[in-house]
Every structure is written in structure tokens, then in C-alpha cells.
Image (cartoon, rainbow, N blue to C red; front, side, top):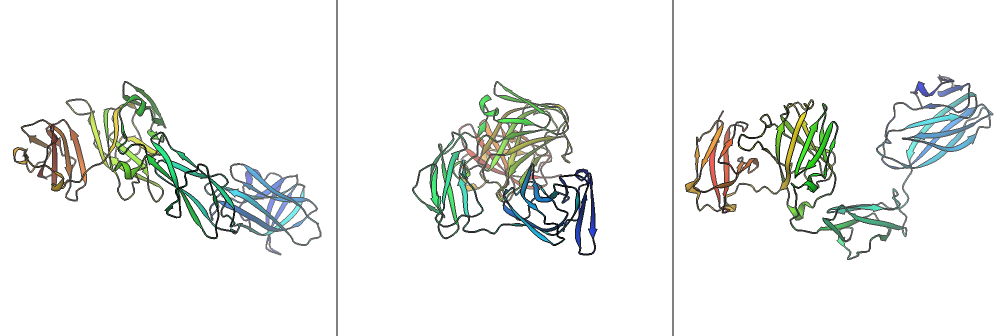
Length: 440
């Protein structure tokens, strides 16, 4: 039964409840007036074909069911016999979208009094088998004519498209087994069971360049929501002009297995009062994951004017797919908004961060590395006979919590109290491990 109605679209109509037979009473004084559901909502059973059915009686007129989902889609017209007997209307609406809110409309093409009852909107039962398109690696897999299910013997065309020139389509995998079929598009014949047809893509390089540090690469990040972005001389300039601002990347997806990515660092100069960077990426199980960095109060470090953000990606959610990434700048840890100003980025680098295990390290000069003070409250200094190229700090779980390059000191003020492991690498690639204690 339709109970709630949108009055703005019901001029020249009156809606009432007919208590005698518990039906909806629609009185119209002009043609093409209607009753409709409110509020709008997406179909509860997902995408597919839906059957709208209702009983109707009333004045001699034509009635029809209508779906509005971004645009109006009208069903078949039905002429009421006007003999005061209930008549049944049924129409199938094909290709209903699963994500867009919609409403159902009951319309009469003439003035009069009409009664509606037993209004149902249900997904059409699937006749046949579900055939699913999936992909592995950097690309997409699309069915030319997608349907909820396919009868046995139906020909289904799949097209694989590499997301960018970093990937090449290799073959089709059917129900988890490599088929050796390289035709693209590929026509699959539906069998007598559900099936998954997966497009396999191969990275053109085992270690692709995932460091966005050139003009061309930084240009793949676009400004959105009060952001004016320009790139010149291998530097991205982010002009913040409103309370909500972000960068978006959607140029190419990445191959996590081949490239072994689990961390991200960003070199920047902060010319604003904003203190938080928020990184957002898709999760394997749907939705988005959020990682916050709260150490941007100073406009870069004192030596170079350039600071570095170092994120460890969410391993339980991160898929390695770098499409649909977003970077936000906010003025405090509440994510309330952004302060206007100029924020520049020298590089956005995705890489693999090793855990701090002794088996990974060459300890030949460990005894020549000295830390002071230890325990430390704020600034940890590292004394070394050779030039240090990289410093990495890990917690007791082996998770990287900080990283810096070309420096012999670390500001550990933001770290929680407890034990940490410092991993250093000098100009010759020699790695050393030292433990230190952070106190408050």
C-alpha cells in the first residue's frame, strides 16, 4: 500500500485512505496526475529487472505505473473498464540501477476517482545462471550486455581493457583455471552452472615507477573541492581556496603482488596553518579506508623547508590498487575543514616498507652507531662515522612508524612512550639496528 506522498508533485489531486476496502483513494481534477512513494530509496534487492503490480478500479481512464530513477520510465498503459471491479496491472521494468534512489508513481490520464491496492515491486526471478566478470591486475573486464542471469547456451561477450600502458592483458581465467584463451573480446557460452570469467593483466615491469616526482607524473593528481592545482618544474602547487579541499588520483590501477607496495611517503612544504593530511583508499571488502597524519604544524624542517609524511598502509584493507585515491588537508585532528594557503608537493611515493628484523640487516658497523639521549623525550641524535642516507623507526610489532632521509636526528615527540627499533642505512647501503626508549 502506498502511504506517503510527495505533495509538490500532486497538484490537482487529493489522497485519502479508503477505509471500506483498505485501499488508497486518488482523486484528480486534471489529466496525468499521480500518487507516488516517498521518501525515495534504492531498490532493496540490487540491480536487475523489477515487476510492478497493483490492483486498480475507478473512473473510465488509462492508468500506468511509472518508475523515476534519475529520469522517468513509464510502464504500459492500461484502460480501466470502470465497472467498479478490481483489475490487475503488471509491468516489468528492465535494468533498474542498484545504487540510485527512486520512487514508484501511479498515474491516471484523466480526471476522476481511482483506487489502488496490493502494490508490489519485486525483483524478477532469474532464469538461468549467474555469469560474473572479474579482473586481476591493472585493468577492467566488462560484459557487453550484462544480465542478472543467462540461460544455458547463451553467448556472452567480455572485453578486457588495460587501465594504462603499465599493464597488458594476457588471458582469460574461467572458474579459477587459466584457459589459455587470449581472444579479446572473448565470447563465453553459458553452461549449466554459475561461472566467473576473469581477465588477467600483467604488469609490464616487475618494479614499476610508483614515485610521482616528475611534472608528468604529478599531473596525474587532480584538485577537487576548493583546490587549484598547478604542476611545474617537478613540483605540485596546491592552492587551498575553501574549507574542504583534496587531491584525487584515478589514472591507473596498480598490481600489488608484482610491485609489493605497502607504504607511502610524501615530501612537502606546508605554507598553511593546516596540521593534518588524510589519505583515503578503497578497501578490498568495499568502502574506503582513512589514514591520518598529524605532524604538519611546522612548514617543513629547518634544514630544507621540506617535511615528509610517512604512512604505513592499512594491511588488512589495502589491496595495492592505487585508483580512486584521495589526499585531504585539514586544519586540525577533527577533520573539520581546511585553512587557505599554498601547499606544495615534491613527491608522492608508494613503496615497500620492510619490518625491522635482524635477519634483514648487515650489522657490520652496528657498534659504531650511537644514539643519545637514550631514553629520549624529543630529539634523538644519531652519531655515525659514515653519512646516513635513511632512518626508519619501527614499533615492537615490527610496524614502521617513522622515516626520514639524509639526517642524523629525529624528532620523536609524537611517538607514544615505549621501546622502538631504529634502522639506519648509510651511503654504502650498510644497515644497522639500534634500540631506544621513548619517554614522556
